[in-house]
Length: 110
Image 1 (cartoon, rainbow, N blue to C red):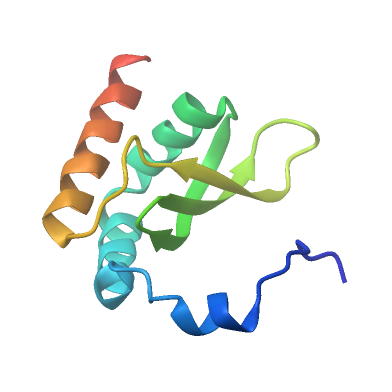
Image 2 (tube, rainbow, N blue to C red; image 1 turned 90 degrees about the vertical axis):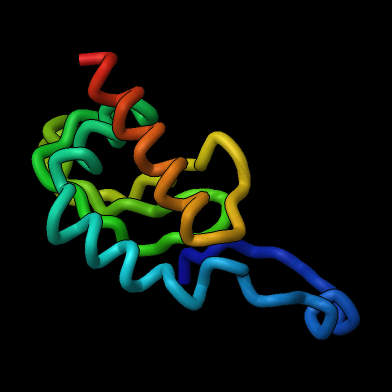
């Protein structure tokens, strides 16, 4: 397949901890996708420089989010775009603060 290759030791694997926002990432993504897809479209354009007509957050972690975007360039189609957060987050309140901050920055650049 075409996956990212990497290597970790068994010790590193056993020492790894789950991402701190994993317990509530699903509800946050659902809320953003159901109620704020226009904001996600604007963030993809602002932070990744890619025009898109649809955007759905497909993963969310303490360092950022991955968005499945319907492109308006290169013949269209869908691509996954990684949008890093400006800082790491560990709590639900921080996720909201960062998403609001990113939404405002994207709206201000239009």
